[in-house]
Length: 68
Length: 559
Ligand SMILES: Cc1cc2nc3c(=O)[nH]c(=O)nc-3n(C[C@H](O)[C@H](O)[C@H](O)COP(=O)(O)OP(=O)(O)OC[C@H]3O[C@@H](n4cnc5c(N)ncnc54)[C@H](O)[C@@H]3O)c2cc1C
Image 1 (cartoon, each protein chain N blue to C red):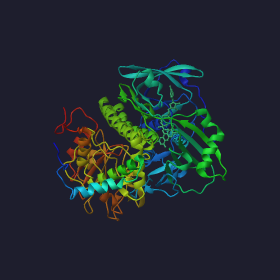
Image 2: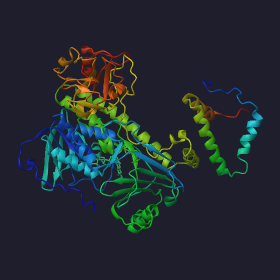
Image 3: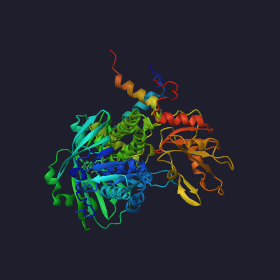
Image 4: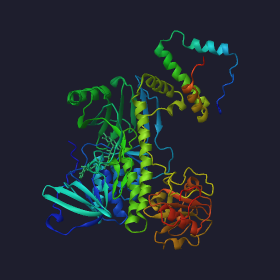
């Protein structure tokens, strides 16, 4: 039911990005990580900009249930 | 302590000594800023009213102190803006501080666009505004204010209402066509008639300390998130006239009110914020909590609610009195047309729709500000602080910072009074927007565009070279609901009565290509516009804007 949000693989070398993401939190307390995640979300959200895509992202995570 | 406050003496109402029943077009209950402005508005519309107030003085404490550009424009239409401007403190720059840093995170301008008569805001104690309004009322004929006249009952009849008034020397009754309830947030009238006032109370306290001091701080609005002198809370600093400064400290929910109000404790807070070595006196100290509430409907047959009686917002955004003045702006001309028999009583439905919508917008805006200032959850606080941290370097993050979105005029774009655009216009204005301003010259004198429109339906016609008003425009001045057409040109040598757009800004702001015709309501909101003047189209638009029984139905509109 996705309209505009791309959920097909987009990131080149996912292992590399994933490792950097986890590295970012290295040695941080839970509070610090939380704060960092918020900044991450805000920067990425601004980059996306498109309201429809952003709202769709919110819907996807709100309704997301892990499948058995 | 604020010695400037005026006391208004009780005067014995003639009704106490006569058996004749007086019938008035309008009775206004409450002489706060909104009730007084309402009286003045009706006076300008030629409608007589009596304003009844249970008290005998202007507001206690400075209360509303930020008056918006739109409020100044409304008051200018009522010939009452100059004293506010002269006395008030004009400012246009806000600064946001966060945490321990003495440097602001960023600064912002309230009014981006120059070349308008009024600044984004002025600061002025509420009691001054009330006094200026009262003086202006006294200088005119049609409005009377009665102090220490408490309304104790309102009885609606089929075609009017009876108001029972209690005074120190006895009770009496008055009859009227309409009652306007401007009796404040606790509105006794609302309670007497059993109407709802739904919304929420916020679990927070704020301490206001208005202090008098000599200081050379710049005239700017300073807002702190989580400063060292008020950890985990917010604070605000604002300048008022008479060397008075408004300090506002967020205190949180669990406080000991009496303890916080002790002068020593307030002084300690003031010194922590402003520094140890300076002299000051208290002008007004108060603790407030706040609520966001509104009535479902503002019009209940012959009783119409305006101001805080109808809607209540948090102070963030200064949307209380400023939105009340927009109620006045909206209601005055409609009620006058109804009382003159030129529009059906159902025109009040549009006041209800337009101002209920505006109140919802204001409450939404003020609730969002509250959620940013006082995050309701741990993650909400983390996001808030992340926004503030990013705001130092990133413009996009500044857009999220919300210390109160300062009051602006509501755009009535969904109103059924508007005639939809058939042509396209490259202008920020849409039908329903209040007009923009621009510098103009008329009869050799520099003036402002907004000064030439309003109080009645007014149109502007962007003339082709050397052209006068279009054929038929003068006929419109003779209609039952007249339309006055103003001719605009950029030609500096144009004759008497012609509006000269000497900087070309009006053309630019309205996309006024030659031949364009803009029609404004008496409250200066745009209601229809065309690329070519067409007399019948203008008449249809006026009929629509005044809800005449026989009017053209727009496509898609329920009949
Ligand atoms: C601390 C604080 C700061 C604020 N700052 C701002 C700001 O910066 N900008 C802004 O726009 N707004 C601000 N506001 C809100 C603003 O003060 C109110 O919105 C404004 O006073 C509402 O005006 P009003 O005329 O509707 O009601 P009120 O000012 O409450 O007037 C109602 C009047 O009705 C009278 N009355 C009541 N019952 C009766 C009766 N039965 N018979 C006769 N008379 C009666 C009362 O005595 C009173 O005079 C602030 C408010 C507070 C508390």
